[in-house]
Image 1 (tube, rainbow, N blue to C red):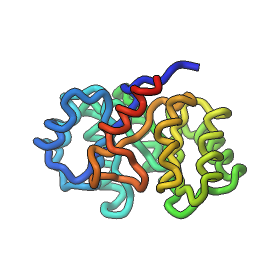
Image 2: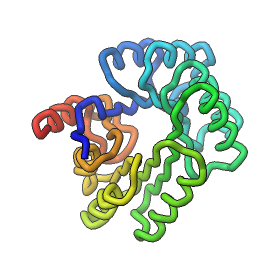
Image 3: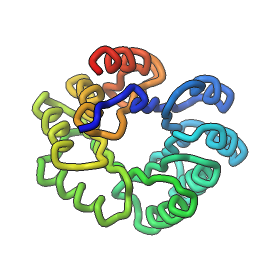
Length: 217
């Protein structure tokens, strides 16, 4: 098993302006830019994604129509995003169009599953992994609310069976998953920019997570 390094910390960023993003990401190995957090123009996206190699373009459902989300992600892909995140349960036409654009531009595809309420049974989680295999993604992300420590253990345990998978146990009971994941083979883990700027429940701020991981590797 490969040893994790601090370069496997991806800082998730939402709600910042373009100048703030460019300033905050200086020196970072990897960052996720949430395009649903600000009204970005195509010019903004080109500026953000053309200056860094290791950026994830993410645009969650809820605020925008699928057509608008796809337009933003396509622009990010063409501008140099290293990864694009697509929900695994997204509509087929949406998913396939973005994947085709990613392949044309050398952008890796993250297919993500989120459950904000609970961690489903193991058979459900493994079925999600099976879907991922035929959908054409490069990395599978499974993020579920951990209501118990057992939920966290089950999610981390998936890494013993699945390759190219990131697991996130959301919530206070799942914070350890953000440290242990890379140690168990996950390609990276997510952190918040700072305290109070979390994009998901239970995220650890970048500086603290970097310190923790540096101390045990």
